[in-house]
Length: 112
Image (cartoon, rainbow, N blue to C red):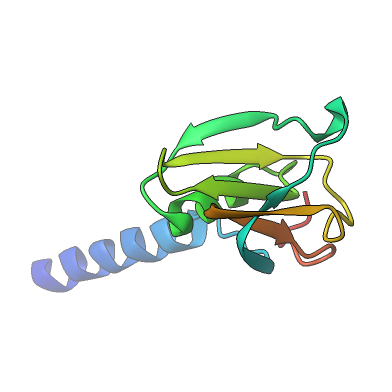
């Protein structure tokens, strides 16, 4: 009886933990070997974070509800997060050290 009670309690704790998680998702488009062309100051990143790889940069963008784009620089492990980069695909510069990421509009769950 005690074992059943302990197992039931542990199961309850696991379910509570899973339900309480903050699950988020977005769809992103990757643009290898390119960076955003910033001809004006509205293109400045709102945050710069150090990340070890492109996946960590994507996760950094995912955790910031205002993030609409990011650029990861491999040589410096730098991830720039942008919040004002809608429809910037035409304003790209070639950069073999960078990979740029656009959040596809309307795909953030839950909506920010």
